[in-house]
Length: 352
Image (cartoon, rainbow, N blue to C red; front, side, top):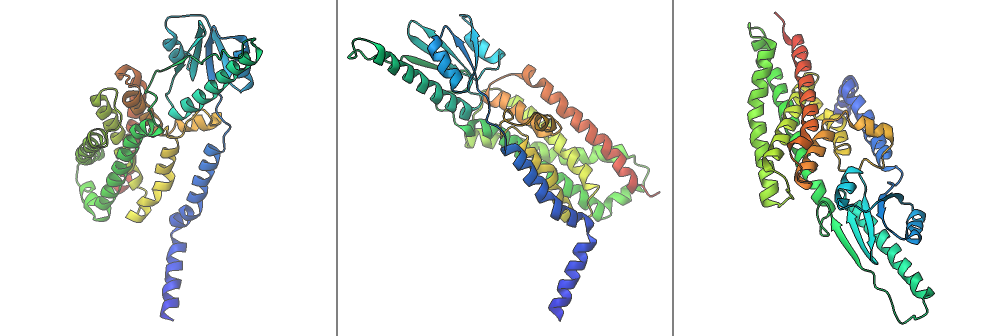
């Protein structure tokens, strides 16, 4: 009887907690739907530039499903790959091939290299069959140039910069949200709100206080990742720290904002499947090229989309501040919006 009574009490409490029930039922469906949409996409079209390549080879590349773009001979072929956003560019000169791989996505580059190499070998084999002296076997002369990384680059080299930003974002969000919630549940916030202090002053104080620990955590994570784990860093470490600090500010303001809508630590944690998990999908860990257009638009409403892109630009590609200024500006807009909403959210706690 006592066990039954306890079970009935738990059921009643769960049914009374509408937020928990909603998240219990809706959050898994939301995440499953996102995973279905993101992973159930068409394969990415690979765009390959060609310069002075034999028509027979171009025809085979076209039959293999590549989007072929022809270019004239130029001394700045690597710039052409970057500016035209090509996955690679194949140049033929005196029976010698030069294959320039963008390699911003090692998995795509690896697949592209394997397919192109296979087609070139097949083309050479056809030449052997057609020639009179079959004892003379032409050799494939292929030089491969990597714009980003090299032949040893692995997917984790691209993934790791994004992971640094994500873990900074996640833990700052969690700590600030639960910390601010404890201020409310302990009555400290109510006491302060009963004084003449202004809401924005309270908010600035809390953001600054938690911000100090966010800065310490950010510096610690970045330095550990680069020095101990030897995560790839081509650009400036100061730019990496700047990006992560701005990302931490966004997480800090978002965590304190959402904590205003939670009544307990348990409810604060419930926001993770709804707010944090989608950030993983849209952070750049999963390539955007194969996603539907509307999903790519949806991704731009998540801060990690810009944080992941900026970190990848600096740590993997070695680009500078000018190349990430747009991402940083949008992240600051996110932080401004969340801080402004925080000021309004605090209004309900001013009782006198």
